[in-house]
Image (cartoon, rainbow, N blue to C red; front, side, top):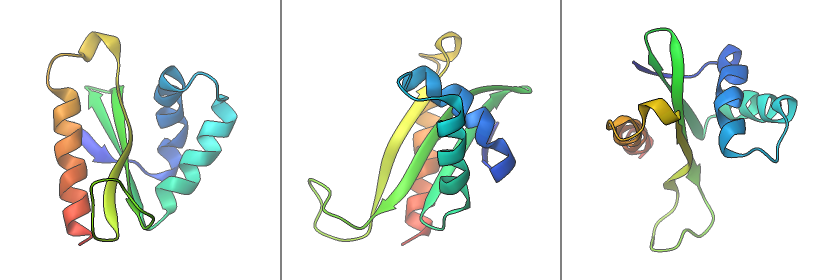
Length: 107
């Protein structure tokens, strides 16, 4: 299942994100995702297998220059992570598709 994260999901997202960005702290990532999740120009999507969080994608609108684009804002994939046991099963593709839908909905 894929759903848009809520503020109370920030620590779950941080727990996944720290595997991708280990130079950070759980506290720092949790605080950062709390801000991102409540922001208007971003979406954090969580993927679960049953009740187990297995991945996330962070997509945002960028207003600065993004290579290869000519318009602004631009939907931008800031990060995507899938737990090792769930890789090569199309999970990242499904998250990316949801990010694309979100970006199109933002215009």
